[in-house]
Length: 492
Ligand code: ADP
Image (cartoon, rainbow, N blue to C red; front, top):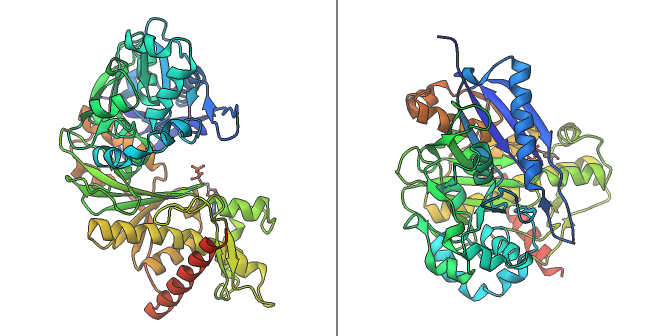
């Protein structure tokens, strides 16, 4: 029998990708197409749901064309997607009734503000904070924005889905109306304890149950993508960050990954019992291959690699992001300089919306090299702040951090991160960890991969970073960083 492949659709905020994997977790081909974002008002971010679907069809067709493969060569299809982005469409026509409201969009902030008194209830039931990121207030916004929205939803004429649900609906010509737990738990009305939609929370946003897709584990036979081929089986669906946690082989309780992109996204597998954070971390559902429950703690750093873009585009200190490594390595330390890139305030564990960025410790001897080094350090120090909270709440020490994302290309940053965390960093061979997670989930459902053990045996790492810094030095840096954060927060 000829070799089979797994096809993954990774539908992200900036682009849609189709990736073809072989059994050795190697990428045979990757096709990518950018998605346009619209900004109708300050803080609003929307996309055209039909464009999203069209881009997915394009990249799938392109990937097959370039590799000379047909759907007969594909074992199964896995879907991973930008989370929370909300689409509402007409059940009869299959046409969206409003643009897709992207997760970043703040257009439903007022709807959330009105319900702020229910924060505790929402947190206890969903593990989330009341915030316009999550789908509930976005659905409310759409139903209010279109003519007779509420009435039509109550009559069962309108359907809601995140991008996974929308894509499956279109790919199956309206036959599949489903989602998975990792996506459902970002809606703000999915109960983390019962694994069901919660009537009390649905009522809070006046969202009729009739609009909602059925929910299943991430590794599951969702149905057939008959719009592409009558035998193409969809066997995985997972939100991007949880897919990446799975793709990073964080299968056990206590295993943790950090993605260093524009922002940083940290997730820790916390096992079969949810932990509700007291320090502003989110509790979320992780990928599961059967009905066994897996939870994760999630924290993010708003400005990660973005501060290197700032050095490049605003400060004009570097021409490319990768140059930052050479500059940082030209000096032996940051000469007492600390950069706090609180450009949009600070996230976990500070949750301070109103403070703004600051630089400390400048002297006549401060050079561009020190400044760049201090800026790179800030990515690792912010990450450490989130990890310390995770360790406290999960009551365990992180000894290994699996890393991915664009900024992991920076060896200086990775070494400094390992040093100040006193933890080993592992960089996988396949950096497309999100897509890889969906590949594993689909393959586990079809039998392409026999077990998680088989996956562990196949999984390859590219590089490791081990901590080298002296404890006294770490202590000194920690103390200075804390002082810098405190001072940043007083300047308002
Ligand atoms: P996203 O998925 O959020 O678009 P990526 O994973 O593609 O992000 O990573 C891009 C980010 O990584 C950018 O913010 C960029 O500044 C940063 N980056 C890329 N290469 C380097 C490098 N060598 N050193 C430091 N930062 C880098």
